[in-house]
Structure formats: structure tokens, C-alpha cells
Amino acid sequence: MKYCRYLLYGLLALSVAGCGQTVQESLKVQPAQIRSAGADKSVVILPVADYSDADDLEKSYRRNIYVTENLTDQLVKNSFHVSIQEDVFAYLIDQGIINVLAYGESKTSTLEDALRDEWSSKMKTQLERYITLADARAGSDNAALGSPGTHALTQQEVVKIGRHFGADYIVRGRIIEYKARQDPSWNPMKKGLLTFVSGSTGKFLFGNASTDTYDMYANMVAGAAVGGLIGSGVTWPWDPSGGTTILGMDGGRSANTILWGGVGGAFGKLAHKSGEAPQAVVQLRIWVQDAYTGDVVWTNRVDVKVSPKTVYADSQYDALFESATEKAITTLIDDFVSQAM
Picture 1 (cartoon, rainbow, N blue to C red):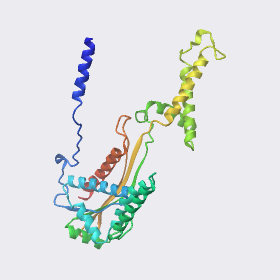
Picture 2: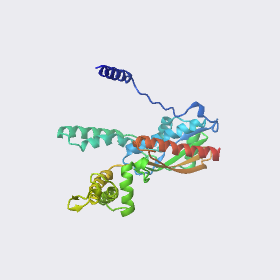
Picture 3: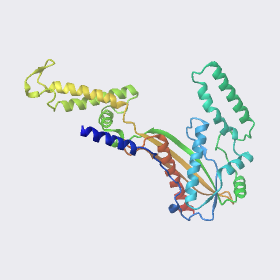
């Protein structure tokens, strides 16, 4: 009875200790990390061109903002004065350089997705009305080029932008690749032990199959082979030296081999759909132009791949793309500062 009382006290203590909130904060530009490389220099960041396989304009726009924000952070970290992005955006619209309609079309993408769901006819009529209203409002805005970020500028236009914002440099860029895929590594800490055993064995025996079904069969055969190998050397559940006849076979060794082979095949089938190791791939190029002449003073390209270090790490794609984008921009800006400043 005394143990039950202690257990109850412990549970009450845990419930009280569990109250409150978990807060995570991340200040991107730490005061202690600020360097003086770009002191007294001003920069204008133009919207980056997105040549990756974007699903829609809304996602392309979000990528553009995310890359631009990381560029701003890294330039501020090097003491550059950066123009406010909304002011730059408004100026480019006024000059007819970028297309508001191309960005604004993303406003209806959620409604269009909802329209494909199983709503009633009355609900679909209302959704169509809202889409029509959004398109009509977007069509009244200024339109220049049809794709966000994919605009060309003459040297005179670059100089004009620099003069308007009093900038020393114009930063432009392109998103070459921004995609998710599976990490090709067969590290068991990333894939999981079961997937590593059956999957790597299946790849070694059969190579890459042309369909998902064949891959599953390869994993099952590989699992059965490993299980049978284990079963031939164990003494459970049947003792090989017992001299008994099991399933029409003399002795327990063959029976253990068949049993463990079947178990291995079942685990191989389970492992076929497990062991995913997501990877975020980001490839960017950045140009820096002299705002007084329009000449390119520096350019470079970076390719970054980020995946969870182990199966216990955060494997959500937003965290992976955040790390990949931040690493890519940091590498590029550090190279610009070291090479061109």
C-alpha cells in the first residue's frame, strides 16, 4: 500500500512539473558574430529567379522570400546596409520590371485546390465566385513579365536601381535546384538497422529493380536469406541434436532454418517501406554587380545537401530546407566577402 502511495506522489509531481511551455528561439544575426567587412557599403537585393521544379507560383514565391531573408541576414552579419525588401519590391513594380500578377496568381491556388474536393454544388459555386473576384483584382494590377524573378536587366537599369537606393552593390541570384529526395547513404544510423540489413543485402544481390514490387521482393528474399543463415546456427525453437523429426525433416537444424528464413522474409517486407532518410537539396547561384557601373564583381554557385544525422534527428523537410538554404547562403556570402572585398 505504501508503494502505491509513493507511485501516486510521483505521478502528481510529474504532472505538476509538466506544466508550462517549451520555447525555442533563434536570433539569426547574433551581435557577437557581426563582422566589419562590409562597413559603409549599401546593398540592394533583387528577387531571385526560380528555375527549380517549383510546384506552383505560391511555393516559388515563398522560396524567393526565404532565400532573400537568408541573404539579408548574412549581409547584415557582415555590416552591409541592406535596403528594405518591400521598398525594393514596390520600386520594381513601379518601373515595370516585375509582374504583380505573376505573384498574385498564387492567391487563388488554395481555393482551386478546395474546388477539387468533394464539396456540395452550392459550395463550389461560391468558391468559383471568389476565384473569379481574385483573378479580376489581380488583372487590374501592373503587369510586366510573366514569371517571378526571371527578368533581365541592362547595365543602365542596374545603375538606375543603385542610384535610387544609394547602393554600392546589386545582389541578384537564381534558384537552380530546390527539391526533396531520399538520402542514398546506407548508414544504419540513418536508415535503421532492419532496413540496413535487408535493404543493403537486397541491393547487393539484385541491384536496382525497375519497379517498387521487385524492390520489395528483393528485400524479402534478402531477409529470408539472412534469417535462414541465422536459423541454421541457433538451437531454438528446435534442438538440432535432439534427433526428432519435424515437418517431415530429420533434426531441428533444417526446421530452424525454414522458420527463421520465414521470419526474415516477413521483416524484409516490413523494412521495404521503412528506413526513409529524407534529404533536402538546394543549389543556388549569386551575382554581385557594381551599382555604379553595372559590372559583375563576383559570382559563385553552391550545392548543399542536408539529411538527418541519425534516425533520432529532426527529419521534417522544413527543418532540412532551412538548414540547407542557410548553409548555402552563408557559404556564398563568405566567399564574396573573402574574394571581392
